[in-house]
Image 1 (cartoon, rainbow, N blue to C red):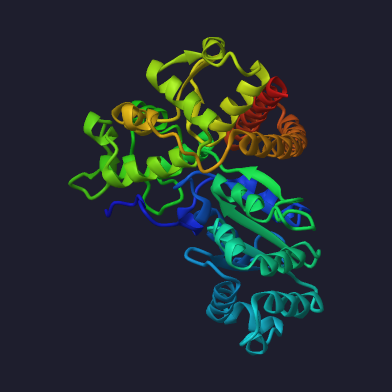
Image 2 (cartoon, rainbow, N blue to C red; image 1 turned 90 degrees about the vertical axis):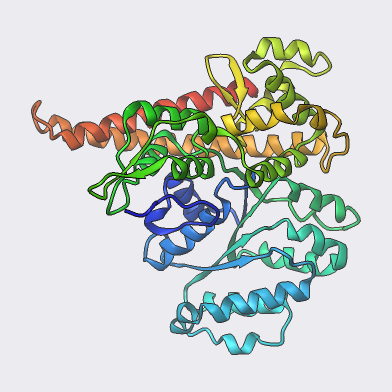
Length: 435
């Protein structure tokens, strides 16, 4: 059996685990533009690829036609137009059956291409579902062609398409670059969604490779250790499992117990951590380093370390770092670094990190971002809570019909829905504490 864990590239289809509720939200949200915010290697590209794959498989909203754009290295509207045309030509089998003539888009700028593409799809009853990866490129485009970016925003907000874009928090710098606009900032009206660690069920399924034809055997203690040390971070889960994987003489796969060397960050992983750290505001860095020094820190003691800000403001930043996977709640009110790899990297580089004074984004910009993300998260969780409650009521009625002899599968599903509801209640309680 080959090592089934994938490290270093995006995944889709059966290799993609979790994000079910988020995917459902992105398919059915009425927001014109959604920005999915996440750290490096949190699965942003894989999320977009999965959205594209599901729509190609006939799942999701059948009226949505996906087009994925990777903006890595794009620094001008001309380059954006080239990437848009390349993406269309690479997916002719998706657009030509719908009657879209891609040839008429050649030689035209990006904004004109999008207008024509929107028109071609709308008249046939479809909606363009634009999936933009590495959206931080808009910051560079703003430096070279601010007016072109303004025209692009107008098209993205015209109501004739839906857009999901992924980026780190660095995208917040975009509005600074276009402060001279007389119209609304580019990010005005953009819905923010955090991309955080996998839920427990999805993380366990990934470790066991339950969606594979050849699942991997793992004992409960090893599974518990893997989930704890990685904090269900999708990349770190794959990374650790890749190093723990082994085969038996009969060819079946299993995971060895976690050993200390497997928890050391390699140079590539250290590079990702340094990028994530550079994208934090000064206050976020200070909070993260303070927790790293103490290993485990109650929020009350953390308040004493930052007497210059209110409890509510501090909680906002702590909650934001939690959603990025950089902090985690270990006990009721005890906080630790998000995962073991990051904890070790922070401790190994504490002196140099404390000397980093230049920040790419400020505390005020991050606070505004957190406020908007909190509002979206609350709405999203309330919607999911209502859906799950209706699902639970339906399942309980089914259970009553069996007069105490319900199938095990039904009982397990009821238990799973109740666990999801309990998790959502905890998350809503956290948001109420922050608000």
